[in-house]
Length: 379
Ligand SMILES: *Cc1c(COP(=O)(O)O)cnc(C)c1O
Image 1: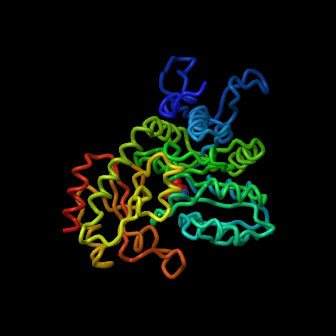
Image 2: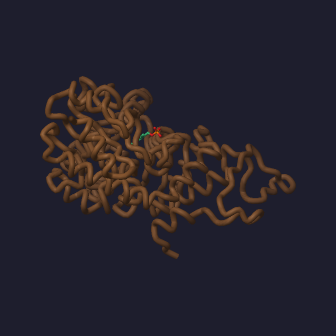
């Protein structure tokens, strides 16, 4: 039993409903479950914070897609991140975080976990030596994002997993940007993978959610305990939307990647574009690592405008198909100015992004239309 990825996306955890034959997993909109006598649960469900069949189907599917044994779904990517941090860290512990981590992750670590006595050191994850130098005897967690947001830096997951193993720390990969279709961190040695399913897994910008997957039974038990104890669970409709989105992940990611390649080709050498950030470019400083651990390079592209910040802002205001909005990973193309939007809070810190930077989440529309739209906006 080792069906391919696209097959598992459609079938893992999603057998036809035994009671009705419903081919699609139903939205089990119920808070509680009838029992056949005290303690006589019919299918292992007693209360929907603890477990819900629609959510279980999603959890099984996500675990399967990441090649993990266990999966747990959460109400957002941040709730999933919070659960892994709490399962991994105690007061007095230390963690290493990317110096260009997702802003919400950095905020949670810096503002919440610091107050609870957990220390952190930002490190440049594309440089294994920089991570090694950040390790301390009490380092319990190395947090990895690759590719990063919005500069598309690449970390070598296998090398970092080896370093974590040697130092007794847990390696957790936020695989939101690549999605399990393009990158399989568990296979590369990660102890757990976190997702904002809001992005590519859901894929349609219509639901917020998160997930943790792992093959470590003890960690899985802790995550399940926290999921039930703190209760940051997705409702059944949200779980269902995410499950529906995940069915088409393989075809979407191929199209996102193809469209991004077309956009990159149009931006490269354009007189108004000073630099293009895309791990698929042979000129990307970590292209070889990206090519080793990713099957393709995804739909996120960033570039700097040759005429500076004002010109970058004007491009964001002028596109017709690329919608000016935060978030990413949906079927529709989005454009944004990280310096004043998603990454405004990094101003003045070492996470600050270039003021002339534009970030694209390339959707799956007709590629020629997207290229035309961008070239028109660049003028
Ligand atoms: C969006 C995002 C998150 C947070 O997820 P939410 O679903 O918004 O809570 C975490 N990591 C990355 C890389 C993201 O893009």
